[in-house]
Image 1 (tube, rainbow, N blue to C red):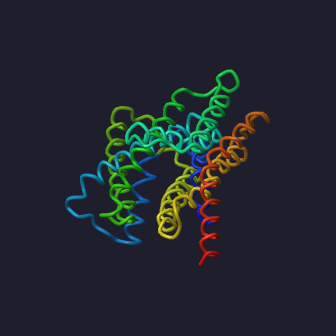
Image 2: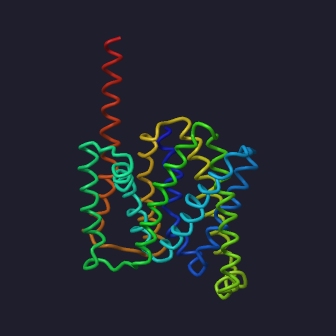
Image 3: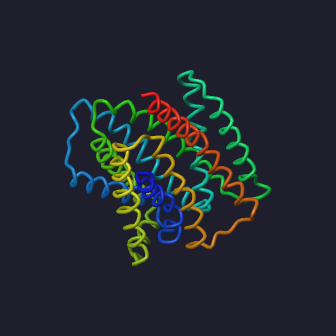
Length: 299
């Protein structure tokens, strides 16, 4: 049941790209990031108030800058420059980059299965993103690599806070602080290039409002809140199984909202990437279940 619940935030996160293109195509990424982060953080704080200790503010500001301010802007750049399906599928390569980062930074070699699935994932991505078969915006691809880097560095930083700061405090305050940074950046940017901001405000439509409500309430407040709640009740490995909903939602929402379509070969490569990203977790889960059954039979 928890795995099914884990699919809910992953599903909402996967719709970010198509919903942004469909409802907020002309909005500047800095403004979108600020609107997504700050209201959601304040909602979560109101739901469960908490205040960091004095010595924790510095690291929370850094986390808000990496995990929220930078990451959200890059996500919206991707949403506005890449096909929704490509964005959703491309982001599942995070485990490969995390594996390489851990290997280079902490000298921790990946397991054989992780290495094989990672190599297969890279090979499939290479074929899918081949310029001869699909035309992709280089700015969007750079934003994807940047967003993946933010996840890896931010996750490492978040993990180091786990023992001394409550998860909910980390979640709500990184959204608030990251949102505040984005708000300041958006104000400065609007003074330099006011046209996009003026147009967004003057031409505000019901479609824009619905898109903002989806991104703020469902993608962020509900999605991140449910994510934290579930991590207290299930393992990270189990939670990753729900992550399959993310690229699937990206593909389906892109098809329904934007009319995106790909060749059968490209869809096959996407499915292959999803399968390779899940393979290590599936095998680990099966091994854990087998060990648990063996232990129960012995006792």
